[in-house]
Image (tube, rainbow, N blue to C red; front, side):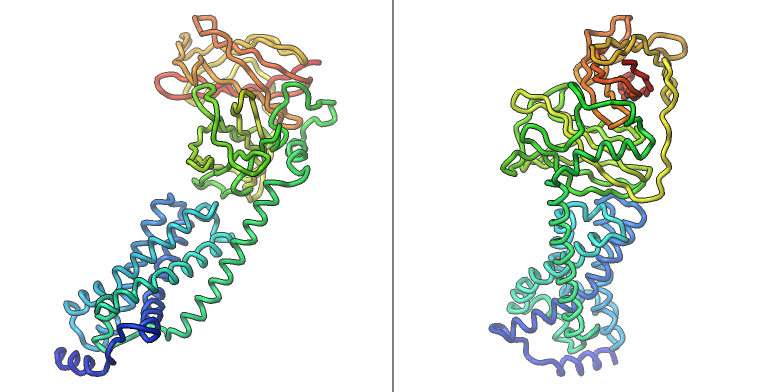
Length: 459
């Protein structure tokens, strides 16, 4: 019965064209059929992976697996309904769809990885759906010639055509949906590109950002603190170099990629950096209320784009500082980053000469801070009442970041000598009076620890 059914259907198909517009038409129709199942799986995988906070690799793996599953299923169901045995259907589906689906998956996932911020976007972000729509449209265009080549040689979709059994939505309907998706995706990506360009070259916006961030958490702008010598990171541009973030918003509580470039006046990315503290560039990220401090070391590709994985657990405005040395000059450029959601602003902890880390270290601060002059600060690290001999970290005994509460200015600090039982010593330049937050990082037993202090600097 099954053999008869198969034989009956096999006489219903027309001879497959091998050249010209007729071959192209068959290739387009076959690709639209394959795209239907592939798109269902790709969209489902991307949506599920994004919603559940999977890594980029995990999300792509899920999307690829579901694309093959739905693609094969869409081809197999009509054959099974027509009475073909599963043992006969499986090789037909594999021969028909494998290369086609693989081509689409390589193309659309490469595009999703290439579009800045697409893999980190929320399901509620237009960027996510726009990039995915655009990727599927491009994947279709590039897969048509692959299917055309296969069909001309009696391979690929020919395996299904020879059965005379076809299923799935009409190609015209799929083609119409695809055209709409292509227009939508292209529009979103163009708009996103224009928005990012405006943010990277905004006129005066970046200069105002730190003050706005300070005002958000009740900073002391009225105290008379002004940007002076030693106040850095207040703008995204300095001496012809500009910090350009790939995007100004990242998801909350989910691992994402923070990408950026340092560009010169002609718009070309900087690629020649000088190593300072064992790195070409140090990236500091902190929320506007000086909580959530992170010190990251991003990697740079051959095109000058820096990137690093990051997780921002709380909503709010964050300040991103790129600290580096270029052409003999020290630079600290700053830009704002937003994490959407209800923001709970925290006041600064009270000043204290002792800080404790989560891992049980006690750090005591000794020294007097004064505005307008170099101040020597010494940090003594103990654990369980016993002094700790710290390991070298970034070419010194420790790393110290100081930020001013009023405007989030970033201050230069310099390690002084080596710890020989006298503590970790730094020279810090406080340009004005006011409240500052100090973040001391030291290394012990192979792990970097962070101790945080609030310091009131008198005039």
